[in-house]
Amino acid sequence: MDENWQNKQIVFFDGECGVCNFWVQWILERDKNDQFMFASLQSDFGQSFLSERGLETKVFNTMYLWKPNQYYLIKSKAVLQIASILGGIYKLSAIGKIFPTFLSDSVYDMVSRNRMKLANQKCYLPTPHQRGKFIEV
Image 1 (cartoon, rainbow, N blue to C red):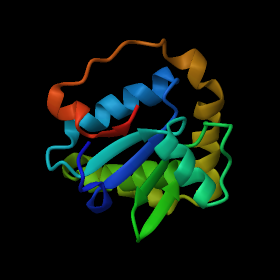
Image 2: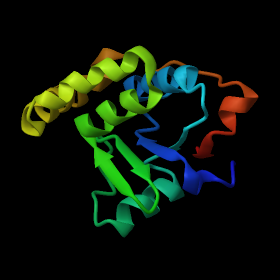
Image 3: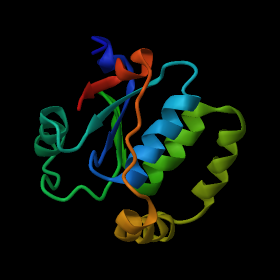
């Protein structure tokens, strides 16, 4: 584990969801500046994050993006911020910020409700460098 996780953007995700794992892989492949680290919501680290903020600790249908000592974002705001941080063409997703959060979160929630049907569970094998970006599995 990278000991500098406090200086990274931490993506919390459902470790048992194929769609979530697809997006983690997608971010990993585009994170050329090593800005992100990852932790499943089911891990001890993920459970501590949720508990410390009074968030739901048994339902894992929300992605969180946490910049320690600065902010945490949820759902569509987290997705848009991740794209913005990745930069390049992904910065164009900032146009999504023109939509009210309740609208973009309702699209997020629709995908979240159907996520187990959308992707099969694939076994993704990260490279050794990518494995180092996971706080806990």
